[in-house]
Amino acid sequence: MATQFLEGKGSKMRIADSVGTAAATILVSALLSANCTSKAQNTNPPDWAAVANSGKVIVVRNTPYVAESVGSDWSIRRASAGAIDIVRFEVRAGDIWSEDRASGENKERSELDGYKRRFEYGSDVWGAYSFLIEPGADYQSDWTAISQMHGSKIRPFHLHFKLGRLVIYAEALGTRSQTSTLYNGTLSRNEWHHLVFHLREGVPDGQLEIWLDGKKAVDFSGMIGAPGNQAYWKYGIYRGYGPISTPLAIQFANMEVGTSELSSRVTAPLPVK
Image 1 (cartoon, rainbow, N blue to C red):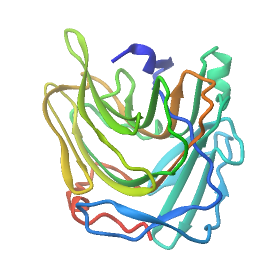
Image 2 (image 1 turned 90 degrees about the vertical axis):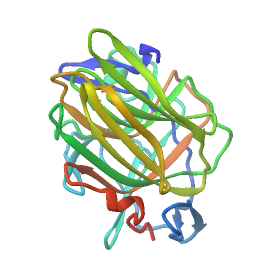
Image 3 (image 1 turned 180 degrees about the vertical axis):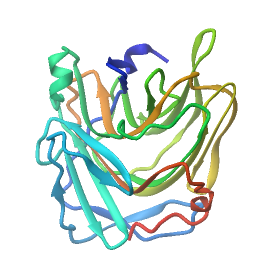
């Protein structure tokens, strides 16, 4: 994969995103069985609260994040109802984060960056969440990352939305660097999708498993990540190269990332309604 997805900043690396489409109402789901998507229903909008782009830590299910966006009211919004936690990201043409603008990078983003919580090389990292890409005009960009396991040396894996498809890439750095496409499948919009991942970085004996809507989409064993890498989670929209005229909006619900096993979420994802 092309190196344009990378950016360096101190010990942090940044990844590319996609822009968000605005919607006047939130789309929430009727929870179906875990091996299928959940069709969204139009309903009364919840009480959204804009997430300030102030550097203040935002905690989502025990993981601290920092907002990276242009800071508009639509950029990042959050709504909670009981045990359900939803974060909505949107990017419009010209939404360039201040640090990207300062470095002259023509990229547009709206993300939560979890670099404050890092995972040591070789540890088992699990994640589970649901996501919904809101309906809108046909969307195209050079690249659009929607969630990614970032790192101090390399991004072990990252998920992209491209031409109506979900594409999953893995990276490894041993005697040479390599990027592989592990999954490329159609992805419906206006439906909740449920994803679970398990990563263990290793060169040459790593592992990556990803389940999508109750079915295994990635079952990889081999070289992934890099020795000494400190991985951390990012999610939202990060895209290039701007300005991209088509807006894009994505909702993420019940984001869990850590070292506790989450295999039970494959068949029993947390409800989004």
